Length: 568
Image 1: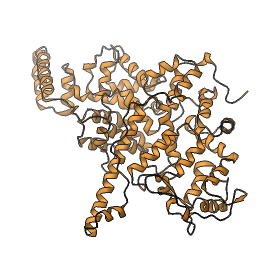
Image 2 (image 1 turned 120 degrees about the horizontal axis):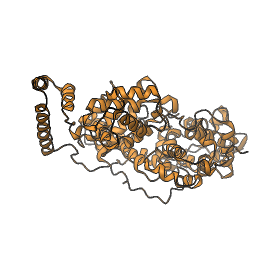
Image 3 (image 1 turned 180 degrees about the horizontal axis):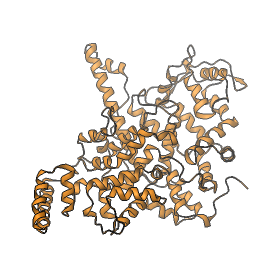
Image 4 (image 1 turned 180 degrees about the vertical axis):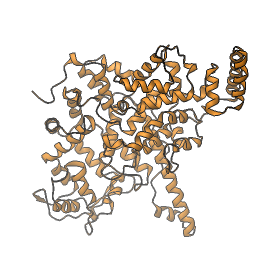
């Protein structure tokens, strides 16, 4: 029996459809689960893998800056003294950082809205696999260009992708191959190509690195595209992987992709990324065979994996920790945010450990269990309310920076309102003066009516309590009088309590748990949710307007911080 034996159609259900959407995409939108569940397993896999006919409605970025070096800036401003030139260089670097920040927001919008979720999931995979960082590659143009290389080759030919990456301005800059000459060959790209990108440790020797570094001399860039500088190339004879010849960079790649280790290496990484962290040797060998049979085309491998019975077994389903990118995109979907705060989302992925376009090193992110620690779990706990506040804030309001900054002390301001504006026209999404006036008038009338209905002794006590209360205490008192919080303070996640169906406290807890979690909560978890809701009796009648703001926040924080919500 093959390890990649297809899943039987009779075993296909909504839970498996959710698993497929979680792993082959970002788990959004949730209504797509029912669509996939209504198909056969083969049709569902095809719906995600054969995405080429789906056209993205999202605009291409118009904020990228044309590449320019500090030397070129100084040359363009020769009339200025050195200090003035350096000021322009610093301003340009700041503008590039802002453009990369906007690029993060642009990419997150693609993750949420793209009709080709597998394309974006693979783009993220390749970004961590062929890792480059904007910390060194200080060009929004180059970072976007490489991101597009990943997207255009997402499920295409691995060999073609490796070649295109090696010829990208971002990689040529990041691993210094543009400085590599026959007199002084640089070994960075040659080493990482074999160790991290194609074959893995132990499949090559130090001499192979030195010889292949000589072969890649001449691979250069004009900052816009690839340039082959023949004058820099070492044409001499080289011995690589047991073969001798006058090799160039293309020859080295050809030889690498003839090695059995290459198919096994990338198949293992795909298995870990899409299935589970612990490598299944039999599954990896089977995937590697599919890869070799299809001349290193990635899509047949993914199709075989997603259609296999092994992919849906209990040790795979619900055992992978959501990456920060997936956690944030799925959280915004689950919270029902009407206006997605892409800038805040980008900042959130950063503080959670996955700063897009800034991998920690050439190895990329470790992923899975490495995403969770005591600090990151606390940050995930606070994120629902922070994203809700960011969603409700005005576009272009720098206060959004502070909102997300409060999640983690010691984090420099890095949230860009412009990141949101890149995907949404500037507009005031906060309450107008008229909306505020109408709310407070209605609130006063309702509070007065409720107070008049109280017994005489309680009326005076309530008036005195309201007079002296502020903040949380005043909101709780108003809730007791039947006054709901202002609608602009319950945007998105807090408004969920108006959208889900319940009549009692117990039903409210069950509805919230069912909305966020794909598995039943334990008795202990349910009791904790009841406590967060401030409810002591299961059958006590409960209406949304009677749930104070703080208790809504507490319930959402608790349910989204549960271990079950961190997994997919």
